[in-house]
View: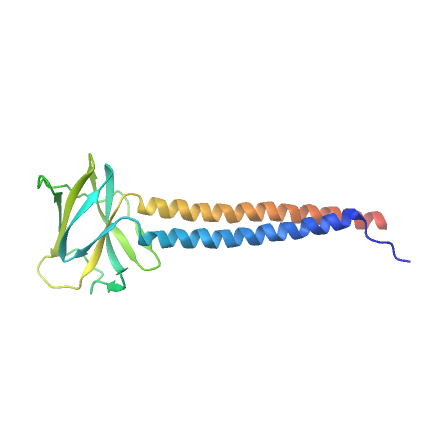
Amino acid sequence: MKSKPSKGLYLLGGLYLLGGLIMIAGVIAFGILLFSTIESLSNDGQRVVVPGKQVINLSEPGEYHVYYETSSDIDGKKYEPNTRDLSGINLMCYDADTNEKISLRYPNSNSNYNGLNSSGYGKYVFTIESATNIVIEGDYYDYEGNEFTIRIAKNLIMNLFVGTLSAIGIMFASFALGGGIILFVAIKRNKYKKSLV
């Protein structure tokens, strides 16, 4: 007559299932957070269509980055320059109230992004001391080209980095916890089998 499994074995089976579910939940959470981080690129910062001129409001003082977008989509309209070399762009930035020129400088490091409906690279940075309205005006120097977009954002790359790192951290934590539970169950079951010999 076969003996029934002990309650301890049922508990170990439940823990084994729990470990697997934690790992699956971690993968799902990773996907959701990563997707939402990439999707947030669409709404981060403000865009200006070039060639063109636009007044934008910057509500916080600090350093802002200017990104040239090699591909973007605004309200269903696709913007893409007909050349990847956008060095021939005359870009001006000045205070909308005082007409004082805002100095554009090159960033200390290169930065690129590729979202669901936009991609671009960092071109300039500038600093404002207080909240203000600024004018962004851009055009091709001496030739005609397709319309494309310029994005002005404060922490675009940092937000992308933090969001991606958080998603990876959640997945690894779930694998560590779930894997630890499964390993604990395996050790306990192995000891139980040896005790039956």
